[in-house]
Length: 231
Length: 53
Image (cartoon, rainbow over all chains, first blue to last red; front, side, top):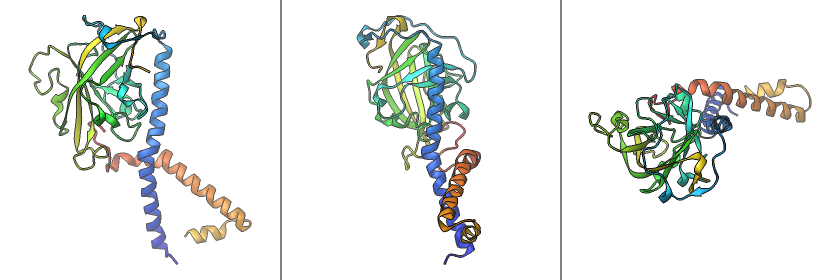
């Protein structure tokens, strides 16, 4: 038979196992439900987008409208990465700020010091890799040319992935207006995705950061149609 | 400990098993909803870096 001490250790082991289940599964169930609620509330405030699909080549390339800065925690728009359809909860809300209260609700968080969407400079977003909705879990699937689309109340912004790199967490100038050159004046409109990565544990670790860069290719008013890759 | 609890549950063996399952389920729910969210920031095996997860 198992003694009292043995029962205690077995209980501890079971509780630790349950903790792993909670972190890898339950946090995502909760977070995804919260993100869906935020998204539903956000979309309820908008007129429906014109469903007519528009090819990337037909997007406008003149200066896009740039939204005003939002208060912390407010929903800015929606992040759509067509390559992630069927893999993770796509169309996640983007909220202002990168605190855990934002990211733990399976939203993409906008670095407050970075530029606005569509603005010249860097529209930088953070998201969880695993747990709490697995927001950016499949960031390593993104290839050069894959679209990253931001939807705001009025506008679709389409970016295309150009490059990625793996950096240590202290290299915060990846979200500078010109990444790695914080003193330079930006000339391009960039979008940067940052999430956790580990050299040894891959998506499960957080000793490094996976940084994906995308560059602006065009925009469209929501009243004029929907980018063809949005489902 | 668990044998002691089981012995002290009332009713037939069948009802004791049912009560045990309910008790275990209640403990799991309490862990998932209240205990784990509180201790997660201190168990940084996978996450917990305040910069970004």
